[in-house]
Amino acid sequence: MRVLILEDDPFIGLDLQALLENEGHEVVGVFESLAEAREHLEDNFDYALLDIDVVGGKSFGIAAELLDRRIPFAFVSASRPAELPAGLRHAAFIPKPFEERAVLNSIAQAKPRRAQVH
Image (tube, rainbow, N blue to C red; front, side, top):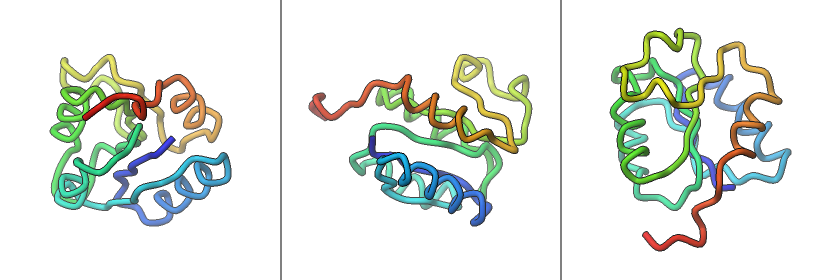
């Protein structure tokens, strides 16, 4: 799968990238800010991992856009799931510190979009 990562802690971003690449996934980018992530929403990716609190605010707007585009994602955050807006409470949520298996399972459960036309 091609994965976009929104994570403002560079060490966590690198950990996630290494984990995914070691499992054969392609990371299309690790972005620290909402602005950077927005610039890459048109990129070809199948899944996203989103920290909630990043440079520029909360990632809820990005998550809503991904829902509209039917791109699966998971929040990877130290926040609590109860803090999610009502429309995002059904989203996959992986608490930090994250377990590698939880991240990989969230991606494995998603269906790739490659066959779909944008």
